[in-house]
Image 1 (tube, one colour):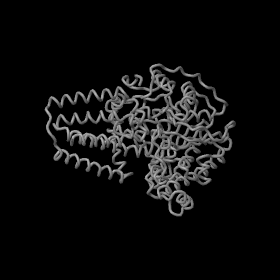
Image 2 (image 1 turned 45 degrees about the horizontal axis):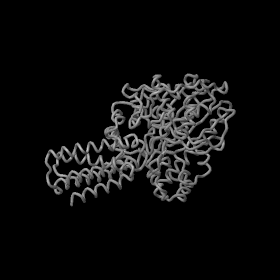
Image 3 (image 1 turned 120 degrees about the vertical axis):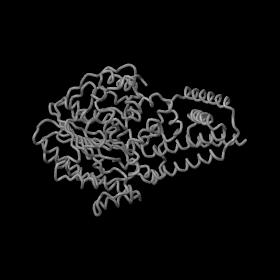
Image 4 (image 1 turned 30 degrees about the horizontal axis):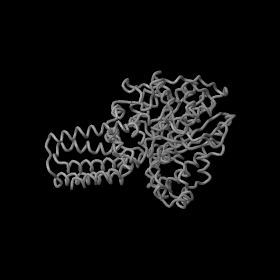
Length: 558
């Protein structure tokens, strides 16, 4: 009787954490397999089932924490991230969350010890234990064949199936291949013929300036109002603008950088997406800067990080950015130590435009400039905007949502918007005849938006695409470019933003970018989440042409 009660209680708890009738049989099968494995060593069903249930709750809890901070659930290839410097980062940025994880870990250890010492039942013969293990393996195989691990792969951005998704990754060959190197998860067997190159619309090649705004999102996504200066920044009246879907939430800005510059989704590489700047250096031979360099453009990166950050210098060099300038190399009056106290956009963007102006003055060739800011990175419980500055904007935000973190976010956004209006005016007056296309966008939402959802009592978005957490903004503005049509644009996936920039600049598209442009109708505002077979075939073409250099064992279709 006690055993039946334990079994029913464990399955009920599992069902509550899964919140999915569809995938519950797989979760139960995985639970029984873990219990059968533990039974080999413990000899009684009571402790084996209790420990298996406790382990399921622990996995679901850790996955829920990861989901809260990244909008992606825990899978097996994430485990090496523990040794990749992420733990010190999380301790520094999110001490309360890490304290909760530590407390949960201690509670897990105490509960496990109590079960091992005080919950023993009647021992079971070894032969029967082996039989139960074989039956559990058979049950898991049947559950896997019934739903398949691929269906659980598609739930990575949904706030359910935390335990079953992790257990599915244990038996998913794609997940295990990601330990050894890059592997595309959405690639077909047959290639897609490339389109013909698209000719330029005019003889003039405008400069292209792309600015990535760290952790910036449009407050209007959550129904929060904005002031005119901020509105003009997010939705410029003389520009094109819209919503931007990205692959990440809360951090990992380089994944957005990768998607914009290569035209690929970082999510296509699974958990290796976190390592793309390390594993991917020298493996991607078609990129936005390479395409522009072939048309005579000078290519420059200016980053608010130091040169030693991750593998930025190596990766950006490998995709065709010839000049790479980092915060510790910007010339005076820029002072990197003073800058890093706040990472102010007013200071950094002024240095960016100054560097651009000097290069344009000495070289008439068209330029591609990519600037990476860091001002609005969390946490937002630190006041980076000095007192007595943007106090009106801070008060406006507090009146909209009484939350100090949001007020700090909005004050930083207001400083960015004000600085950008001033610098855009400087560009227009300093180079009255020079055509310039300016693209700026948010790389991901900060963790703060989860707090905003709770404050506003909005339902958590656990739908199939979980788009609200992965939505930022983009804006495209033009100086001295005839034929540019301002106004609201279509919502985009970030993998298409580079292609759209080339189209709006009116310059030639090579066959790869022309083909990618043709996928817009197939994928619309989603790239990785799209089920487009043409996209999968396009990936096959890039691999077959050597434009994506994957290990041989990672080239088969998924």
